[in-house]
Length: 346
Image 1 (cartoon, rainbow, N blue to C red):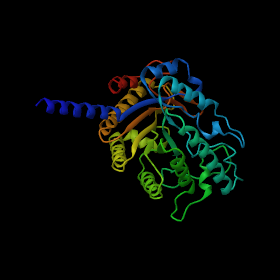
Image 2: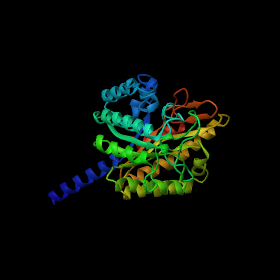
Image 3: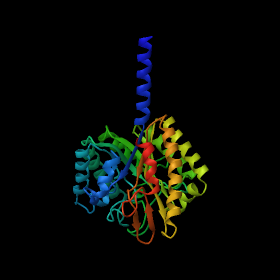
Image 4: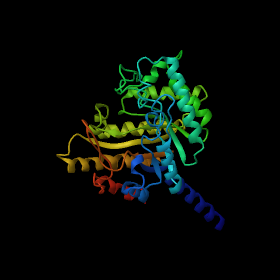
């Protein structure tokens, strides 16, 4: 009887702790927020960090023959000092340097640039024990289900890498090459296919097919990322305006991920408001929506790894757009959504 009780206790202990470890919550810090009040607030609650845009090509490789790892190096130092786990957000996608978006650049030149950047990034981050996850590609599919591609000029939201071309089965060569390099050079980092927008069926059907196709080539895809920039664009209006359906769609996607041996990441959660004339009500609505999302993520973590990253921690203003709300106000006072952390971080 004594041995049976010991076995039961051990089973219960490891089951509970495994479930707890399957739901990881963190937030984003920008480089200029290190060693400030905001980073102090981060360290009070979190050990999972996304270093904002410090690893993106626009920062690391802004011009031909120019490399600058200063910002991400300091973010890595910060993580090592405070024993943090990092998800590197430096994917191949629209957030590329202006010289990459130059209309005159050929497909061969783009492929050389991609290989160079991905190779250097993977070699660097594979040496960092704090780096647990890495976004390999980002924003590759439009809500319509079409591949996100290039546009004229170099100052628009575009994806120049599609110019490299498609393979014989109509899959982008740049996506395949990115995962090929990451599989080879970052063997100990979990590789994420990150995506924006809402839950438009054509988009996610294409993403699922893409992941299966990438894997059929022998390359790893270890997780799906959904950004979760709520109300930023029309593509996420539906999630908020019909929340029951949005939660069901999110639930189904997480189930598909876990059934296919994929982790699931909410990578950039925030809540957009155009103006602050009705901010108190907006913040209460944000809390209600966040509560529904968090409850779902907690439940789904019983079946596989789930992570949640709050994009920024305080209010973020974008000129000509509006205000992105997170868990703290502009003055770094807790917003109503912060109260939800009491349950998930206990």
